[in-house]
Length: 252
Image 1: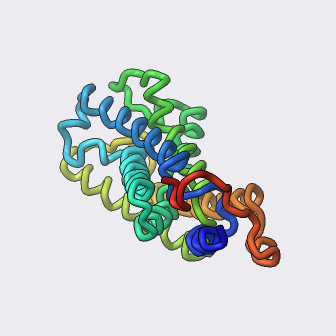
Image 2: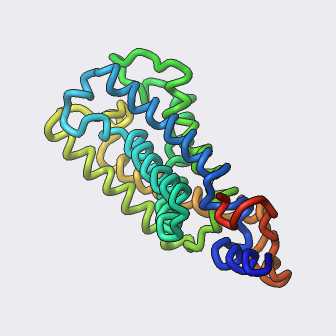
């Protein structure tokens, strides 16, 4: 038992609430998340529209870029669960630093702008999304990634300035991407971009970068509210002893 406990300590961060990588609850969360993401992508494929035939496909939408990154994050996480690979687990956690705050940003922007005026985010030619589809695009990814962070991951170690640098690269990289798509398609994916002039777009993307960085800081704060502070955990030797279970420490 002592050897198993030592191996668990070496693998699991003292603040990480539940066992991961794991073929149990962690794998279940990743599998359910990937199922929802697959449902979203299937809707895009089975319901083609003008964007489907345009340059950039649906990856013109920040929503779909975020969904793709979320899918990659959870795919790596599921592989880590199935193989019990520390490297894949670390890779999932690294991807989460970008994907979780981005999905929080997407949810806040989409529902906030939609509350102001749905025409800012939904083109006039697009029929209303079914509720289940709308939630799978704009709610489930954020909830799934936040749940993975809070219960199956070590805490973020990124400081605010690096987080702001990352979010700025994503925001202005997306701006360059949609301008390239506009060059070929002659339309923007979101009607909001048509309403704004260049200066206002700069303000939009700069404020979005700041909001994503603030989302990262908020996730760090919530993580410590839920799981405690690392200093306390280290002072106690280990905040949370691994649960006893049948089989070896890998959960087989």
